[in-house]
Length: 163
Image: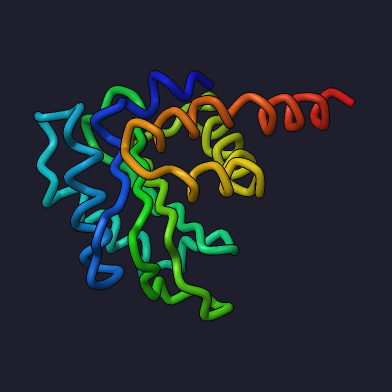
């Protein structure tokens, strides 16, 4: 997985003020479509909401991983937001969310797409990375924290799979 190809710098936004989970998903859908202008943000928003109805996408510790499948999408793309104030994301634990990593994938997932989702889940559960993301004060720093922080968790995942 190449995180730099998956998350473009203009798809990373720091200090986002979202009023609710729904508002957060609206902003996320706009970020996800920045690098895919042929896909309407309204379609992505509808798919994200549809996916959330199946079950909350909170991972724990204030992190959400909303994702959806999009017809006509050629390759997966992602976006990252750090919220100024946590929002209620309907998590089972009741914990609010301040880090939101969104992903849209092609409608028909390949083995590589599935592997990317699993790797992303592992990366997002790394407490050191999350601390770096929360310490970022602007979008450039947030992007750098994500890309710099990806290496250690991926190395752990690879060694666990091959160990």
